[in-house]
Length: 205
Ligand SMILES: [Mg+2]
Image 1 (cartoon, rainbow, N blue to C red):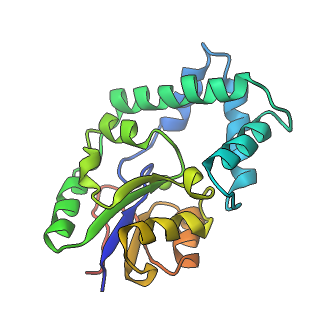
Image 2: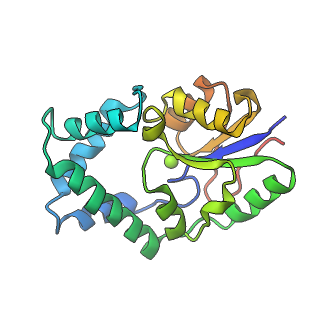
């Protein structure tokens, strides 16, 4: 029986079509287009690797973006320009799918806890940008890097379930990516349900 549902954010709660292109264009004034491609590459390299905490993850992440060197401009670019651009672009051009609020309310009336697990930071700001209240997620809002590493590393999945006080086997994970959301959820012993675009996911109750 399902006691909790964890949602991924990007590509799951909204249609992220065109986001990558808009992000590239947004980084031109900051001379950040090269950094953006290094950031994509660093995410691939660190995908699924486990870290003791968020600080350790970000240290290695920024060093990987800097191709093995600590470059002070990298964390500044990432936090001040890149993540802020993402929030601004979401505010201007994107909205959550209409099913999101309805589905979460239905889950809540059945006493099911709802949480969110993203591979990116600034999760609350991104939810507001999409027109969603972070309060919808009574089980909490989490960034995987702060909980031990990027998906499909199972430890963030397990930590979210444990913080809600539910067993992984009673937890459903809804996400748009098989290789990160799917593999991570299954490795953590959860049920994975693929996101369905603007059609509500079929969550077993
Ligand atoms: Mg996603």
